[in-house]
Image (cartoon, rainbow, N blue to C red; front, side):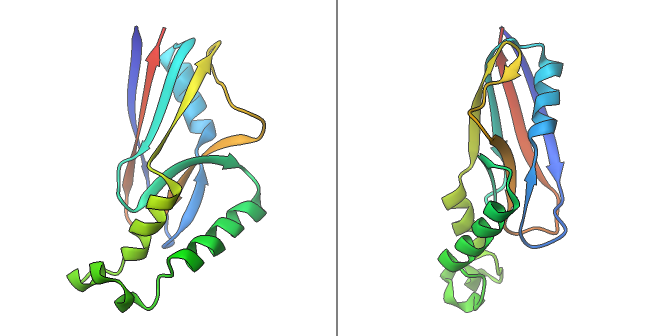
Length: 139
């Protein structure tokens, strides 16, 4: 059994944003030398997400609009969490909807995706560095 553990850091300069990290994950799969196994990609912050979907600008725009309708940032006093002095309660809720991590099969040394699938980092309370764990295991 082989394994590789890597940490990636993202510092999205806006409050919210989406980053296609698929090319970075592919490089790590190559580096791992795993031919058959699993790749876990995990956002290690409670206001960020990792998810799989289509890399299409309209869809990413729709996510932004939909998430803001589900959990609007303002007014910040609508959330009990923000009584702590923070203003990111909406980011916690958005992360909950979008998910914490993804697991992708590795087959013949490559990520085994369905059509159009890509891995994204989703940021909901940006302007500071956050880590993503990548753990690859297999043979």
